[in-house]
Image 1 (tube, rainbow, N blue to C red):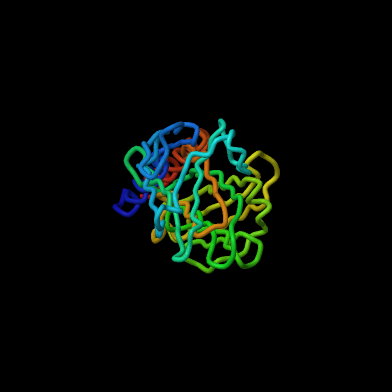
Image 2 (image 1 turned 60 degrees about the vertical axis):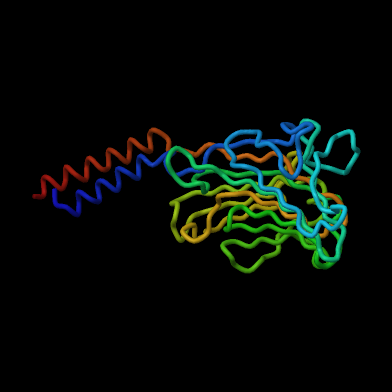
Amino acid sequence: MNSTLKTSAIVFAMGLSTCGVFAAGTASDTAANYASSWGTAPPNWGSGFGIWNNNVINGNNPPYAGTYLDLLSYGNPDAVLSGGYAWGTYANSGPPAPAFVMSRSFTAGASGSTSLYNQTFSAGISSSGIGGLGSGITVNIGTAFNLSYLGGGADNMLLSVGGGSATALPVNYTDLSGGLLVALAVSGSLNSATEGYTLTLSPFAGGAAFYSGSGTFDSSSFNTSSFTFTDTDTANNQYVNNLNISPEVVPEPSTVALGISGLATLLAFRRRAK
């Protein structure tokens, strides 16, 4: 076998065996894990995520920006309660514009990247009031995806992918206040200019999606290695819950067998041709 074909065969074989190598770690966490233990420096319950990094910006005195554990008994219009709890944020004391930022890094899988790879990240978000110009909430999944709802403008959510311009989605404040399940599925080759994704926004309580769109992004320049929720100068409280990273999707055994069979055929043909 010549060196070119040998190298190609090795690369092909490696491609068949990458399952579980490059993925972010499987992860799950919910506000119900934090009864009596939530705040700006909470413990890191759940599994598979890095540490919480929660920050108050322009909280003034006393802090009018921060976080709390919302309970079913509070009676708030919180549509992402799960097990009776959700993470709540508030930032409504400007000027200067206050903000609360809660974020969580992803961990690496077996020996690879912290970015998603043939996986889905999901989280629930909701709102009980946004406000006017300068107010809003944003969800960032790594540096690659920015989803926002901004006050004082059109009644729709906005999406920016890979640093591109924001585009309007057919999802409005009524949908948001009713509770949204944000699900980002990533597929294809990691660290490529054309890694695939599908973003779906659907009712947190279940039902038909409000929006589902697919495309590609440059995962060699933009990562999917963390979750960040930012509440900026909003009129009322915001809510987050149920962070989850699915296991990596692996090829069906028949698909792998077909690939190995094809490789064997290729090598046999090459030997006969020599």
